[in-house]
Image (cartoon, rainbow, N blue to C red; front, side, top):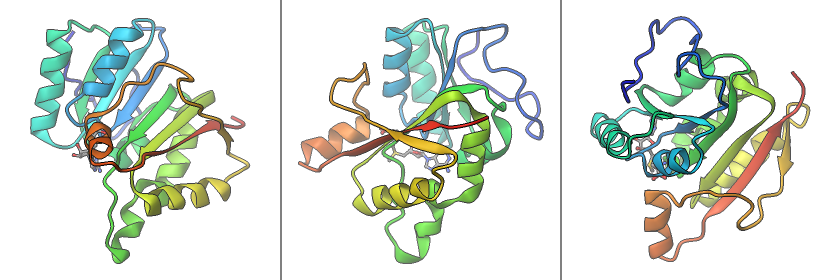
Length: 197
Ligand SMILES: C[S@@+](CC[C@H](N)C(=O)[O-])C[C@H]1O[C@@H](n2cnc3c(N)ncnc32)[C@H](O)[C@@H]1O
């Protein structure tokens, strides 16, 4: 199977990403060079992983990692995250969505570009997660993290926050996270579970 996933139709919900698979699907939004999804896919052959990334060079690096590690359960798609979640991913088709070290959009006038501040993203997230599906966020950026807490606090009918203790489950450190940790920055993390249908 080609490690690059190209949607058959950009204007319809995807019928499938891994043909005929019954494995749960996890999404890594803004997957960068693919370190996280390839680490996860190697550890969890019983799950499927799709990385979403808009930069061509990073998509190429992710493809090369998937091919070098011979991972049939990992693919990468070159597309924009908000559109992917809002309109493309299949309804109730995703078991976990990871958003790891997203671009912080630090300028005051740009806060509405943060995914967690966009109702299209939050509505889409609820649509694509399956029953009890999860959204996992890590960021070194305090304002981004606070925005996420506020957004999810306003949607307690759709999502409930779950604990995320150290070593709760296998979760590789991402490239950007490692850079921030090396610089002594603190990483915030939070995890929410979908409520309802
Ligand atoms: C700060 S990097 C983090 C990469 C990786 N998640 C990590 O933690 O190492 C953010 C990544 O998200 C990608 N990205 C940012 N906005 C995006 C968007 N709207 N759609 C798709 N990818 C996006 C960037 O190209 C970049 O690779």
